[in-house]
Each structure stands twice: as C-alpha cells, then as structure tokens.
Image 1 (cartoon, rainbow, N blue to C red):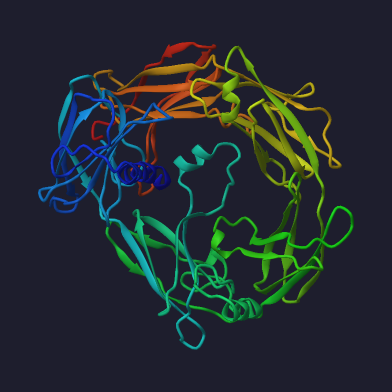
Image 2 (cartoon, rainbow, N blue to C red):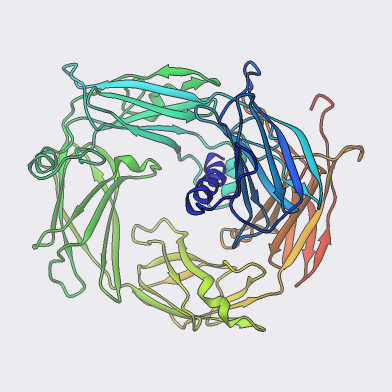
Length: 564
C-alpha cells in the first residue's frame, strides 16, 4: 500500500511550496489560507521501538471526500514530538504522520506502512487530543555489485521485488496476473559499485541486479554513451544470491529497522544481438519508430531496453541475455498511432530475422452523451481499452473525451479488449456503453482484420448512488475503526472491475462510500493482514442492489477475536 501512503505527503509538500502566504498557528504550524474552521487536532509522534519523541515529523490532514479542491492541513512536531493543528474545517480526513527513516503511519492503523488506517471524522468545534503515532523504522537493503574480476560496476539496476499479498491479489481483481512479482523499489549502483535501497517495510524480498548496457540514469553523453550502447550488456541478470532463475533465488527477510546486505558478483555470459526491421503500412522502412524489448511477464521495468529505428527502419539490441521477451513497436503521426508487438525467444545465437510490420490498426470512434444535464462534464471523461487476450499484437490504449463528447482510438491492433470509461467529475457514472448492439461493459470488444463494425456510444448519468453504515464487532457493542469496507460488483468480471470501491471506517466505526454506480454488489468488511502470513479478518458478504440516486445504509458485523 506504499503508493497510496505517499500521496498525502506529496499534497502536503505541494501545499507548502505553492502557497507561500501561510497563516502560522505557532512555530510548527504549516497551513495555507483556507475557509476558517473551529476544530483542533493535537498529539505526539514517537518511535515505536523505544517511545522516544520524533522531532520534525510531518503530520498531515487531507480532506477525504473532496476530489477537486481538498482542504489540506499540516504541522511539524517540536522537540518533544508534539503537534497541534488548529482552525480545521469540519469533515472527514485522511490523517497520517511521516518522518525520514520511518514508515508512514495512518491514524489508528495496525502498524506503520501496512494497510489503511481510520478516517478522522470531525464535527464543528470538535477537539481531538492525545493522538499518538508510533512510527516503525523502515528497513534497508544495501550491497555491492562487482564484475567477474572483482571490479565495481557502475549503473547496474537493482530491483527489490516481492510476491503480492492475498489482500493485493483481491484488490487486483479478476484480471490480476497470477504469479508476477511486484517491483517495490529500485536503485542503481554508484561509482563504487554500491547501492542502497531504503524505506522498505518488513517482509521477504527478492533482489535482482541487471546490467542492460543502457546509460539509464548515468550522466554519459556523446562518445561515452555511444560506446556503452555499442558494447551492450555482457552480464546476465541475477537474482540474489547470484542465480539465473527465480526458482533458485533466496529471499532477503527484513524486520523493522533492519539493514541487510545483498552483494552480487555478476556472471559474464554469452549474450547475443537482437536485430530487425520495422515496416510501415505502405511497405516501406519506418524510421524513428520507438522499439522496446522487455522480459516477458516481468514487472521490473529497469531491465527494459529501448531503441529508435534508423533511416533504413532497422534496430539493434546488443548484449541480450537468453530468455523470453516481448518486442513492442510504436510510431505516432499527428493523427494516427501505429503499433505492433510480438514475442521473441532469445537463445545462444544472434536473432537477426525479425521483420515487424506496423499495422494501421482500427480506428474506433465514439461519443459520450449525458443522461440529463451536464454537457460540461465531457472534458473530464477518460476512455480506454485494456487487453484481455494472450494475443501477441493487442496493445492497451486510451483517449481523452473532447468537450463535444467525441473521442477516437487510433491504431488499435487486432485482439480482444475490455472497454472502460471513468468520469472524473464527482457524482457521475458510466451508465452504458455499446458498440452497435454489443454491450462492451459485459463482454469483450473484438478487433479483427484492422476493423470494427459500428461506433461506440457511451451514456453517463448523474444518478450516482451512495453507501454508508457502521462496522461493529460481532456482539454489536464496539465500533471498529480502520476497517476496510469494500463494494464489489456481483458477479465480478474483467469487464466491470473499475466500479470497485472501498473506504475505511472512522474512529466511530462509520464509513461512507460515495459515487457508487447503480447495480448489484457484495459488501464486505476486512481488517488487513497484520503480516507474517496471518490472513485478513473478513466479514460475510452482504448483497445489496443500488438504484440511481439511492442512498442505502448497510451495517456490518465483523467477528474479531478478543485479543484483537
């Protein structure tokens, strides 16, 4: 969940930087000018390890239910770890604390860096005091990468990967890949061959080192970068402790505050060249086409290789290790996008027979219409196509809807796609989407022989629904804070995963989920896994059917052990 936790901090920093005219409420208060409120929040930030105060920790409040212009409040702690934020407008807030070297923690979260905490609900004039954030030290992986002679290697890409948790697999929905490792963080070796990757949560990680032969983040220009590209990679990507296959790799187990070392001695192997030509739709060579070679079923983007075709439409990747790859090609004209992709198997011999022809692809036109008023909403509608087949050629694409409601996908390759549309304007939802008589929210959109039949018609409506309620323990005596309440379509499918919604309960056990499209759903409450293989605590699903503009209350019981 780390990506989610970084957003509030970015908002706080942006507010501090962009609004130079601030109203200080004491030496540690940071607050931009905003509507005057009368709520106050105060407390302390301390180390979870020994209870010592954390000075200069950042504490933030970000309004939860306002997408366009959320109220943002922030403060830094004093030498005793104390903070106080005044004149807060009543509302529901994401509330968190952060400090360098520690994992961020949300209000009433079970532990730092893991899962969501509780929403802080404030009513007019309310004072919340004695809040305590106990931050956990982040873990670190360091190491040194040397070549086969023991010399340090500069610019080697090092990735920290892990298997997705059961919670995350559920979040990914029906389209989730079953076994793909997730890249958690990454770094690059310096001139001493050393790397340092910090800010890691406790857990078991794989570490991978890749020397791609690409300049990447290094400041190499002119002749230096040309020579590097000419030589290409000489070494195979390795998993710690220095093996070629993931099945042979060892995990690096981290506990809170650990700093562990994972060194690599890279193996020089026989690498090969992968060369080919790109042919345009008119049969002539295509220059300046963008060519990407990446390992198949790999979420680590640091090992990708990029080239542009030359005047003859040719490209060459040097130093490619044996393995399975996906070769993607794209070219953009002012009004048309061309693309193609194919799988490439690389062995011990040079691959020089690749000819990849760009297809003009299908042009799919469509229009968004509003059910009722709201034509001005069209500029905040995004539409896209996601691949659903194992086709070598299908490529995801997206488009922004114009102010008149029209949109166009160009260069759509043959394949099977899931259509999705998102209305960024609060209170609106996608009511229907049809290609001719086909409902593309219920079945795949098929592109065959570079064409589709008909145009897309998407209807949006302002008749959005809302769910709220309270989560209590099984005895209905104690409200539960920081519980995740999830709303999932019933039945789920790869074509309706975007309406999935969730929210956390506040300190009173209350949750609110706005902007739920009308439909049939299963509602569940869940306390995230505390880690170390423990399963999450889940409620039985509650079936609910929501009509347009309907507000329903769904209270949920959760069986929590007394020790919880």
